Length: 290
View 1 (cartoon, rainbow, N blue to C red):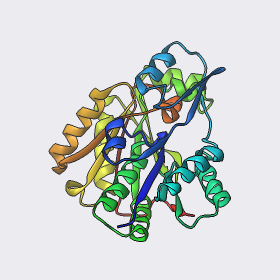
View 2: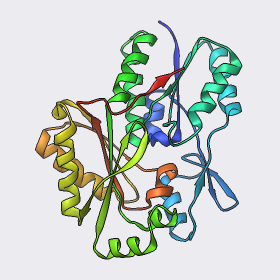
View 3: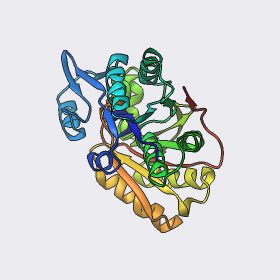
């Protein structure tokens, strides 16, 4: 049986127990508060990130993981007798995939496979878990890659943004729009299309927000009751648990993965965001492997 080491990055929002359970190597995204540098989910937990955000008037910056980091880690895995499967954050949002691909090119090994998932956060994390489970079943690596690409191609990401403040700070909306939106309790709804974050709609108040998310699941999902559904939140687990209960009651879903949004996405959406991730009946992305 071939030995395969899965690599991912912290934009997958995978928890330490999942990383340990599947023996995954996670590389951390650098996060900057001004001149202070941290590493997402290494020396900056999601909770610490949101606490720092409370007292920070700017927008935290993230940068890509450099190719030399990937090159060093890939070489270690190869020396230990592993083949490498690197699943990476959407190339439409970061240069992380290109860093991993460049590392493969520099090493020159056909035993390194680098995937641009075109996914983010728990949508990305679920694709990593999916690949890890297939490998546990003893599937051939080429089969795992093809199945994972198909999984990523159908992965829906729908975010209900908790506050317009971070979108205003980042220059994505005007201050007046943010002020009026917050007063009226308007929740912007965003989604992914081929690895990019795009506007989908808006909901006024939490009740309508939850209803909207369930409507989109019914409209886009396939066999929801048998799916492994992903949920995340930013510093508000109650939102994710409420949505979980509603999904379980409506669709009979038994398996969920819930995580807290880390710094990479949290720096754009702030606190009180909740998201749902599920398999669509349609292809919504074009992931690739190098």
